[in-house]
Image (cartoon, rainbow, N blue to C red; front, side, top):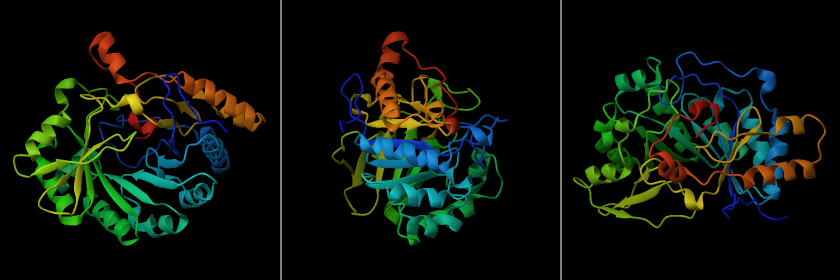
Amino acid sequence: MENLVDGFGRVARKLRLSVTDRCNFRCSFCMPREPVWLPSDELLSFEEILRVVRIFASMGVSRVRLTGGEPLVRAGVERLVKMIAAVEGVEGVSMTTNGFHLSTYAERLAEAGLKSVTVSLHSLKPEKFDEIVGVRGVFNRVMAGVAAARKSGLAVKINVVVVKGCNDDELFDFAELARETGMTVRFIEFMPFDGERSWSIERVVNASKIIEVLSERYQLYPKERESGSTARYYGFKDTQTGEIGVISSVSEPFCWDCDRVRVKADGKLVPCLFSRDEYDLKPLLRSGATDEEVIRFVRLAFMKKFRGVETLLRSNGMLEHVRPMHTIGG
């Protein structure tokens, strides 16, 4: 079958699949203070999710990342991982998580076929971490989850949303974490997906600034960028362990070779993270539509994929709030 291609010739290879909008944390750059959750019957069932994955895999999408909210708050998610990992054409299943439940689930997830986890970890100072996530006393549990994931054989990346005046004083601490453990630590520019709509360009720490600061202490070298990658990676010249990455969604968008497509927990297809355009798959999935009809709908929707962040910046020179991140996943 032909690949899934948008109107600019970009080919979809990766599916970001939200399994729930719920989360047990309340990070301000993701969640509103009083979130309104989707009713359970609005969420796609595991069987519906599996059908969606099979359909996308038939069009050449080979890598699936489960997101949320927090995917591990959905009961039985390890069973879903096993189902997806068995789909023909799927080469890898990964997950983005806040790490709170990883101590419990890491081994089961690895046995089910999960290959890697990306843990959101926005401070290495326990008190500040609690303040950021809005829950007390959870830092050590998250770190134990990271250790459990590594012990189970999962590849682990750390994601850090860098916000000026909040955690931008911890860049060296996170770099040392990468060097000491051999993990990948990725610094992400603050994007307009915060739940409280407090985002402003003044609070963004540019990726180039992050590299400039880290270069004051470390000799870094750039690694070759994989096509479609959201991050630019750097190694340390004095050691073979660990690497850092920067994701410059705001200051230097990388939309030209974007290979991702997203499906929300309620079945809405989102071709571009920065666009408000959504296309509802659920009525088709629940009305007896054939796979061919769903495929035709997906192709038409993806063909309308937004050009990217550069278009917004060229049109009005600024970015505006799109949606809370917990409703779509990373």
